[in-house]
Length: 430
Ligand SMILES: Cc1cc2nc3c(=O)[nH]c(=O)nc-3n(C[C@H](O)[C@H](O)[C@H](O)COP(=O)(O)O)c2cc1C
Image (tube, rainbow, N blue to C red; front, side, top):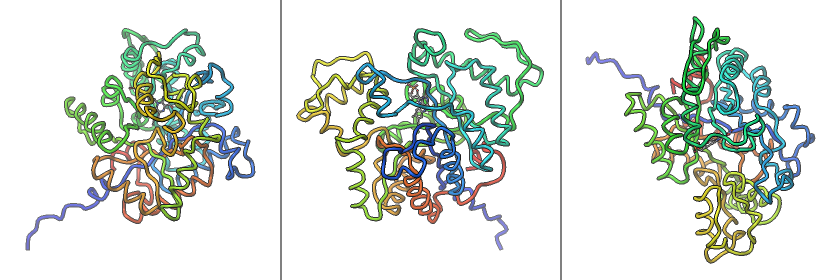
């Protein structure tokens, strides 16, 4: 008989299994919507979000990523009024204390917090992350961002942020220093171009270092992500762009002599689910209808991501061809093209933005699509987000966690429990 050992089959099954995360904003929940719940304005005490983390863990979701930004934007109509009606970025609480509360209410869920290299002194950040890793017993992750709003800089006494690529050059040094605080047993002696430190190291984390996450979309951002990240979250739109993004990251890793499988790439999606495809499509049409609260929210969001004041344009006309911006030129050009022969309102009606894939249907058809997408892209999983211009509700969570995720689990595409070890070890074993 052939004595050759049978290769383990788990590795193949493990690789088929998607990594699933959820993007959480510590902000008002769907207080003015039909599924607001009985304490619609009670988001500030964190109870909704701690409960949500428990639900994510019940569904064996790998990780929650807590978003952070510290501004009340004035991009739409040059005032805060629309922002407070739309609540896209404000009001908002700090994610770190919420992460600490979540760490005490859960046991296995990975807990990734966003912290900006432009806004925290490195030693504070090293210590806060190490503390979260201790509180969660090895489940902390850091979403490394460099911030992009000048208003954020003004909160800490700067007029403006550093220019985009300089922010990444600084971040490069920043993360090296933070890593020394985590690992330098004999203290830190660091003398760089931007940072210097001579101090005993911070409290060490449980993991060698927290799981490092990043979302660089630009070339400098992708270089940085490929150098540091264990996990990347991204929103390239459509299958070819998703594949190109992941290939771009993997090529960078290969050039650096790093195993490309050591870094996972997740794509941001907002599944819209119904008991029939027609029901889900009707929901999508309502979510992205060109009137009502969601529409204002989407316009304000578009202004915030692009720093273009969309309040200056007539909703029922095309964007003028001679319109210019100091904000995101690519977004203005795309909106000009989209409104040629139609209006801004018509161009935004019926379809969503800020997700990688349109996922609209029953749990079965959406699971089919996710499976096919991962086969095509060769990707590692998804970052779920309520999106759609709406606010989060338990109702939406249930649709995904009790409808879609069990369907993925039945197909062996999502884990049904957590493996052993720390968050980083579990991720590396996937
Ligand atoms: C899924 C996702 C989540 C993000 N979360 C945050 C965040 O919480 N705070 C923040 O300041 N930036 C956040 N960003 C912005 C990224 O850090 C990054 O700046 C952006 O993707 C543009 O890439 P670039 O910096 O390479 O130009 C996020 C981006 C993505 C795609």
